[in-house]
Length: 92
Image (cartoon, rainbow, N blue to C red; front, side, top):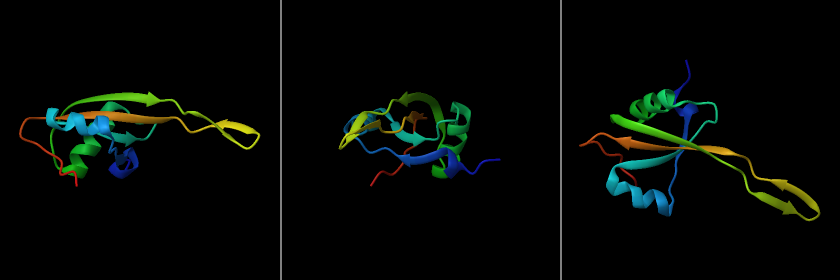
């Protein structure tokens, strides 16, 4: 069994994520191999809230260059977690 902190890496603080707060939705950076069920269980255990819905997306890395060497940043997975009415995560 995985530890919940292995599934949910961090809470994502962006302008788009701040716009979703009134809708009771929160953005998280999650492990690439985790699925919606694992994300739901991890968020419920870490933050002691009830999750209504989980949407996931894989974000492609951007092409970067250091001097003459071309490369790209790593791909990562984000999750938009919708909480049930009356539940809230304190974002400070």
